[in-house]
Length: 440
Image 1 (tube, rainbow, N blue to C red):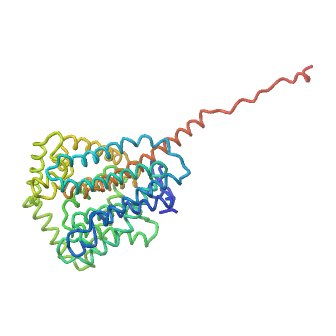
Image 2: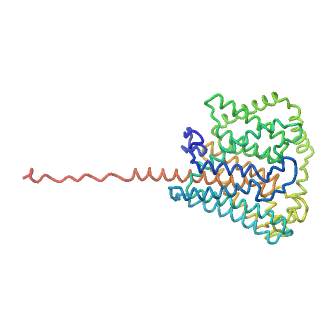
Image 3: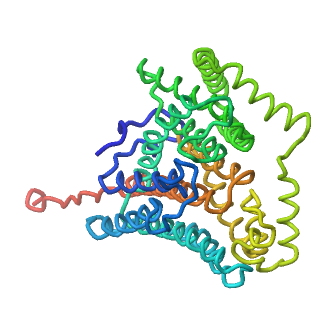
């Protein structure tokens, strides 16, 4: 089953586009439930009424997503006829860093100030560990380029209707859908914008029209959400792609201008022009530029930093920030790691981040750069809002992206080795014996 056309656009790197590799049924199924896990979060039907979740972990969608992902990865290994690719042996350090940090962070529950708060967060860390473990099991036999493409495709299919729903529910306040928060919604819209660009087909008019319409809608809703962190993350990822793809800078700038025109056209057609402009002026220009209002983030950051200094080596323990300050979280995953896991947690998290940033910087074609942009979006957004579980996209998408890039690089090295071997091996010479009878 192919999730997109199996064609390779002309590029200087001569690589296969990861999002266009044919996916098997298990790979597509796995990518679908990874996307559901990322989008569902802590969601339950009770949140539609604005009530707190009282269903328990066993009845939440995210728990069953973890179970399905583990079962799917194990069944794929058992039923697959392909052996483990030898070139994926170097991906072990990626899982070592990610699993070491998550396991250590969950282990800090042993010295947390509040055992009940620590236990709740430890369960969430356990879910993240299950997802990362399933990616490692899946990589034993699956084509991780196809898995990454399946995740991107599923994200596009599931998030696009939510974007349209967000536009229909916009009433002048910060836009969000299904009882979720505006910051997470804006981050997912920024991811959707980059994913849409991955699958954009400029050769067909209707596909190009749909891409411009959805992309313009994403830009408008990000502004309408009032999330300054998502705007900063989108800007940072866009600059990374433009700088990295400097050879096509003019073409990319023309594309951005076209996208801006499309967003302006949708803004004029929706009738929310005054509301969205007012939201941008109030949240970005007035609060950020003129008043330099950080919505209390500066005090939160300082408090988390001081807690980390007081417990320098191993932190205050899991959910220690909430137990000490009665606030939810520090709104920055590095400060959260420092406050609750100490300098050990920061070093483990930093090692993992260095790996995924290295893969994003080392991308060789436009689609890989867009995938790296997705990783940069979730990483930058995690520095402004959300706790460690809210930033699950950093771990899940980061691991899947790096595995897909490493899979592609290994295939390229294998093909290059075979080409060199074919040139060096010469056919055996034909031995010619003298005709002794004729000579006689």
